[in-house]
Length: 198
Image (cartoon, one colour):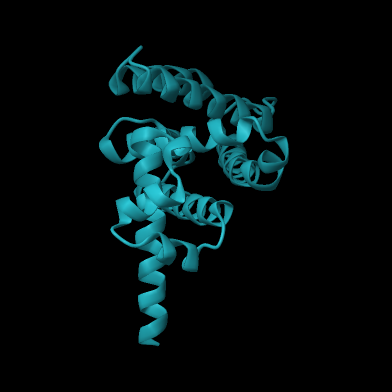
């Protein structure tokens, strides 16, 4: 049992080193040797735990997804009404604090890596956004049933549009076009239009 815990801790240490490099320098800088140096371990040890760079990239990507999921669950945990859940989902994605900026920058590094590789995008890039979009659409349907959203609105299309807007706002924050507070204000404006006021 102890050996398993040690192995998992070593894998986590190496994968998080890759995520730090992706955040600061982009994945093009995350060679196996660079990851080993960042993790403070030998190249041989990185190759022992992750025989290929793709396996290391995928393991780190799964850990990044778990970090975003944990953040989202914390934010959603405090929400009660459908609008609060929708707001929590979308707000926690926006890069408005150090944690969300790190997560957004690292996801951007992964998207940049797979854009030139359609097979990689199909294998690894689409599932998580689809799940998030489906969950958001489900929350919008609950809001419809509660009479908070126009019953004729297509919740699937609306969910896709909201996520696309938040992704665009996130890029504009990272690019210095607007602050996180300004991005949140834009999101709030669109949610006010979407949800009926009492």
